[in-house]
Image 1: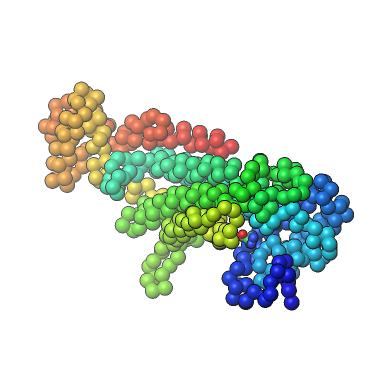
Image 2: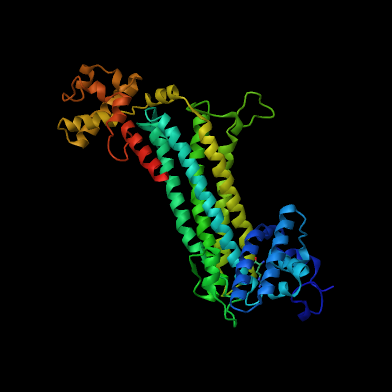
Length: 458
Ligand code: ARG
């Protein structure tokens, strides 16, 4: 039985293995909704241009309505024999409404159809991801606000560097996820253009109205070259690059959460619902969610490379290679979406332990730079101040004490510029409060940034 649309040209049926190899229906059926949306817009235009009759258009609408219901009810029968989502739906439409269904594909090819579907699908997913990034930022802003004054050591090289506030640390991620949202919205502009009308590759002989279809589907513009319209997937690659950066930021944060939750550090706890135990060690509570997110970042990075590699050798115009764009794209969407959803929730399940953070900030001479800055303000050149403080730290390391444990007399041995007011400078609170400018860690600046971002998020 010949079921394929092109089978008259063939002398023998496609082998079963090849059918399975070439079929995409089991993953591209997720495009069903947008495929129908695209077909309805196309049919409406065909009718408006008198390419098909108004009756055919009505029949197509009726058939598509029923197909939508069948898919929603789970009764739609997806057939491997019909290769992909497009042919499955078109075949069912023809079963339901006869010749009108057979006229739907006038002036269209699966090549411009699938490119349109992916763009419609991706546009919706981008909007969802941008919304989730917003949720995550709102959660991080709340955490930042609760801990605008909480001090922890800031690190460079994972060595104690200078005291910072936990709120400031959270705001660093708020900035990263803010840029991620910008990138997503920027990519969206190039996603939001209509390929339909390009047909297989060269355009069509019918008097179509592409602007009309673009308008119906909410596209900002049409693709202006038919070869480009059906063959490039740069918009999907751009999205995957933006997604890889989202995951990279999530992964950096995850690394810190794992570290902070280690009993050796003990800066935070993560609510039980995001952790799991061990099947052998009864005492364990492991931060599985951040660890998995860190791991899944590799998979999203891989999808980006997969798509770049998929594209690089393809001559114009459409090649079947492009069918391989879907699984990496879908998995990227799923991974990023789930990760952001969980992280927005988990951010609210983080318990901060200010005493542990404070204790850590008191070790490692976090205020050494403050002492050097103090000497500079008293007139010493910075390089000389740096050297004087290095000597002081050296003595403290030998004695196993903090800079603030030295007496005024002991300190004056390093510089006679040091006076009684030094003790305010050496406190953790004094240190963070002194970094009081845009982008600095002072609690007052942290609060200003929180207010700024909240206003942006509306
Ligand atoms: N399933 C195909 C894809 O995902 C649809 C386009 C097929 N076009 C073709 N000429 N074989 O790309």
